[in-house]
Amino acid sequence: MKLTYYGQSCFGLETQGSHLIFDPMISGNELAAAIDVNKLPADYVLLSHGHGDHVADAEAIVKRTGAKIISNYEIVSWYGAKGLENGHPLNHGGKWAFDFGTVKYVNAVHSSMLPDQSYGGNPGGFVIWNDEKSFYFAGDTALTLDMKLIPMTCPKLDFAILPIGDNFTMGYEDAVLAAEFIDCDKIIGCHYDTFGYIKIDHAAAKAAFAKKGKELILMDIGATISV
Ligand code: NI
Ligand code: MN
View 1 (cartoon, rainbow, N blue to C red):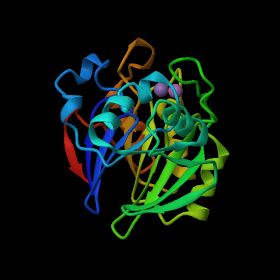
View 2: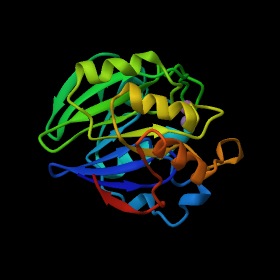
View 3: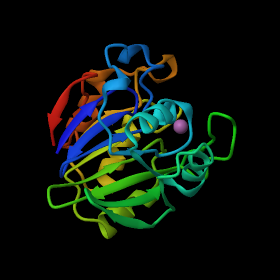
């Protein structure tokens, strides 16, 4: 799998010949000014919840590429009403086998409202696995005991993408506990530094994970890593 960071909670993932984009908010992110959202390949767009910092560029990407939206029922229906009828709705605890792998929609403790203030359903995260790897994209969430269900119900995680910016989600201290709950040693941070409320001390965050024998990776925007 190849993972590229596009800032805030947006990642591109290439696996099994498919391109996935998670939570696209690129054009409105000053830190991601070097990324051209009109050039990103996409077969699937996964949306964890309806907040603008996770869905801002989804409509443009789907209209340009014909990508399939994967999200909760309410968000998929909202895009369907806009004429983007190719989405796949999930709800919490449910999974589906796509051509690139299996996606399970799992709990997040957060809120969800779409940009026009429509109800965005309940927020979630995704656990995704295929022959190559298994990983968890948490979306926006607080630390929650529900995370302990992931290693009980899904293949052993190779890595996880967790929010660490505090204020609107868990901070890195709680994310260390989340990494323990999900039984995962390789964590990629997201949802930090984009605006004032969520600016963090990178060295302190990495040290908090290292103290528990875990690795926190903070990717440069535009960087790609093999995972
Ligand atoms: Ni949010
Ligand atoms: Mn957010």
